[in-house]
Length: 134
Image 1 (cartoon, helix red, strand yellow):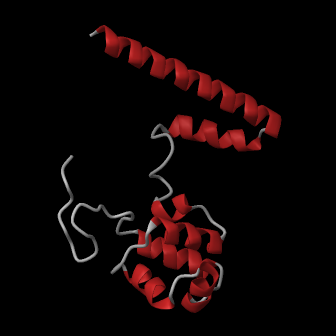
Image 2 (image 1 turned 180 degrees about the horizontal axis):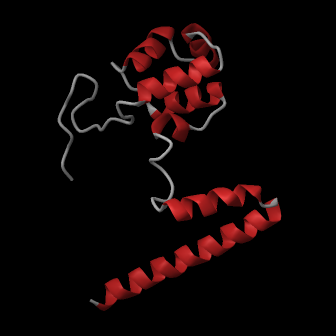
């Protein structure tokens, strides 16, 4: 496995946990909740200087800090790490259909989840089987 080049933010062999948009997403999430950087630091247990560095894009949090910040903001870590269109199906049709599942009852959502899980298992089994045959 190739190692990432060392940068001022990363030790040799480490990879950045966030992208360039992380700083903007973090600042926006904090401001949406009308929190100061100090308040976010207090809630998350991070030092305010680190919160400033994260929002300036000059430093990146460890996974533990990322988790603490997400919990402090009461949002998912995914919302800090990914743009809205980065996750989920690339197909607009499939994306719309899956979004509509949110309107289902919890029982109906469980049925859809079980169906998707079954389809994924079948897909992985076919891949594993075809890979062993070659």
